[in-house]
Image (cartoon, rainbow, N blue to C red):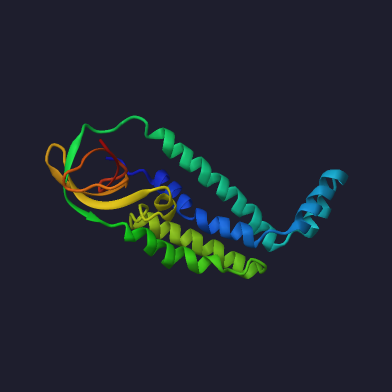
Amino acid sequence: MRNRTGLKYALYILSLWLLFISLFIMSYDKKFFSSALNYFNDRDAMILLSKITPKNIVFASSFIMILAGIFIFLYLLFSFRAGWSVACTVSDVKNESHEHLEFLTTYVMPLVFTDVNSKRTMLNLLIMIVAIGMIYVKTNRFYSNPSLALLGFRIFRAKIHDRGAKEFVIICHGEIDDSSTIRYIRLDNNTCLAKIT
């Protein structure tokens, strides 16, 4: 089973969607838009460059990451149309959905109130986002995703009975219990995306 590292990083970007929306709102600057409008009218790049501040960079970056999050969600929505396993039963189901809240309160919320006006804090924000992403993927916590929780996905730990029994972390839209039957797609050796049949 190959690890889908790219997918894990994509899920990490999606998990920070709320942070990027918050930074987008906090860094909005209408003066930047007037400077951009002047640039397009005069074709003078120096006008635009002279007006760019760390706040504008955070604003533009947040906008790009919000768009990336939308594309990632659409990719996930359409890429898992096929490749599901046969119907399998589950047992020893434990609800692990508190992982979403832990990730949100531990990593996302402290970054929401970052001062976006300073180069130093902007650099610190970038370093923290990259470092948290590397930890997130290396420790296989990519399923702790508050954005997926908002979309109705929950996290369970359970044994899947498919040519033997193996315990997985299961990301599922809806509730599963010991009487549920699911189809699944492995995301790595210990994690899968499931749908209830």
